Length: 245
Image (tube, rainbow, N blue to C red):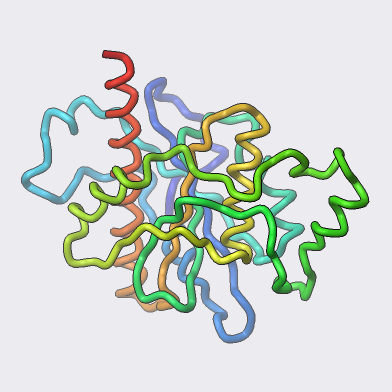
């Protein structure tokens, strides 16, 4: 699977991409494909398979470490809320891709935005988020006080999608505007909110994958995730280079 999170980062120019996946979602989904995909990723981004790839761009690109969180994340609000700051604080993370399952979709989608409110479904512990009551009680001390109802990623999703689609011409990859107001949406907003509160760029995306978890589906999911990472890194480097020129 991807790199060990406890392994020291030795390359100064190395780009580090954090990956997470979720654990089982109730009885009907005992295997969550998001974790099967995450744990199957290589420790570093491999060279592109396309023979038409820009070789000069490949040569000038720093290594991209794929840092997979070492265990599936429990599909529970309390777990996610406590975990997200630990994913980011105290180490260099250039980008993050949270992966989750979308039971009603037969395609792969990168989410543009996440939502603060509207979490009305119980998690796997049969617990509700309860933030409506919590923010009334805690007031200015509420964790997301002063943050907007929607947060958008700072990643240029449109540019990333164009690159992603070119790399995966036979796979249905899309942009989504609704992450679903469940744990997928919740971890996405939690990450974007955490970075916003730290006054950092919201350098994360959420990838929704179909429910299939057989070997062929996982293989496709790994390829899709690799090309999404590549598209995101290249898009970010181009934007940075353009600003510096």
